[in-house]
Length: 275
Image 1 (cartoon, rainbow, N blue to C red):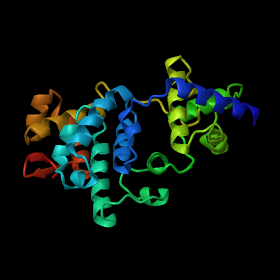
Image 2 (image 1 turned 120 degrees about the horizontal axis):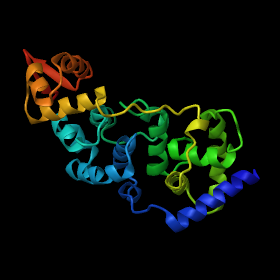
Image 3 (image 1 turned 90 degrees about the vertical axis):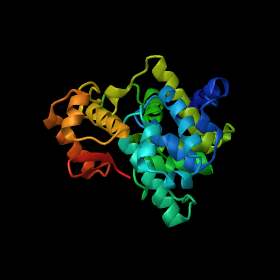
Image 4 (image 1 turned 180 degrees about the horizontal axis):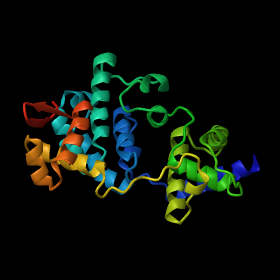
């Protein structure tokens, strides 16, 4: 337990000196706004998220406002963050909360996991940051801190199953240091970001690291370009190919995927952003 106590004390000390309390989602306990931030922060840097987060919650200030919005309006505000399916999931989650829970967020992780796009991590993050409850979860910064402190000498790759008990054991130690669950997880994430800025990388030690494909010339890039063009005006596949300067076959393949996902709809030969 001494190693874990050292971890907790180091993280708490750093948080009290360098904590990122300026992050806009740290200033709220509204589960809707925390859901927005968590969806945006998936695979996206904090610096890119901050202005989009502010614009998004200004445009759609409540879960009801988002639920009532058109998908095209949601995607227009989201544009530039990438991974447009996250915006669609967020929109659908808002609609489900309004329709099934009368606009009130569930307080249990298992119920939150039933929302579109919300997995185990996001559900527990909402419970911790909105309701200040001591749930146990892991994400990339927490994984970095835990591996750096507790598994630095381990040769084999470390699984999240090995890290989660340490995260659970750290919660009462952090409380003893004066941090609530909400503050403790913020501190862990801040310290993980600090380690990364200082060159600490644990990718080679984690069983859960998957190298992200290059964005340039990827299907993800093409899908994003299609959505951006259709937000401007509906178009045929051939017109999109000319505007994006890609082969029609590649455009049509991604249009089929986008239509199956409910992102776009086809009316005769014209493609539109779904309503």
